[in-house]
Amino acid sequence: MTNQSQIQQNIDDLIIKQNQLIIQLDEAHPPILKSQKAQKETAFQKIMHIMQHVPDYTDRTNQLKARLKNLEDRTLKLKYAMLK
Image (cartoon, rainbow, N blue to C red; front, side, top):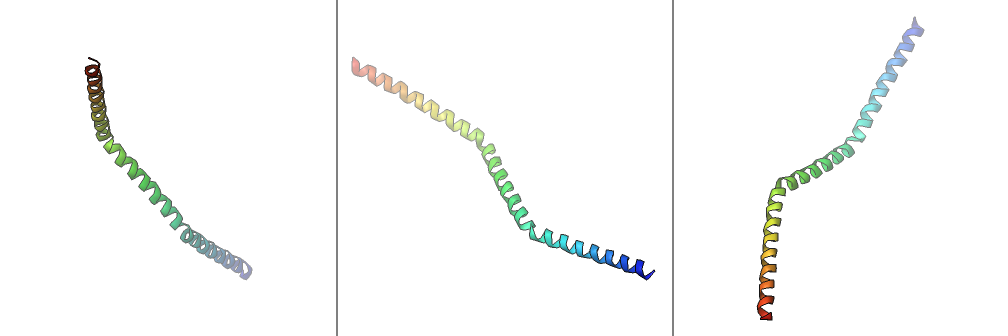
């Protein structure tokens, strides 16, 4: 009986040691995981910000295209007027 109880005590000690090592491992790695998670969240937030403003960018692009077309038309008119 003492031999079996000693074996059980050794098993219990090993389980406790294993749990302590798991806790130490968990404590060692979360800062890395947290910073990676923060980077992913920051990147996601940037993407969401850009996606929210895509309609604004599209409107602005269309406005600039219209202004460019207007300037091209005016340039052609001036060139035509200079040829006369």
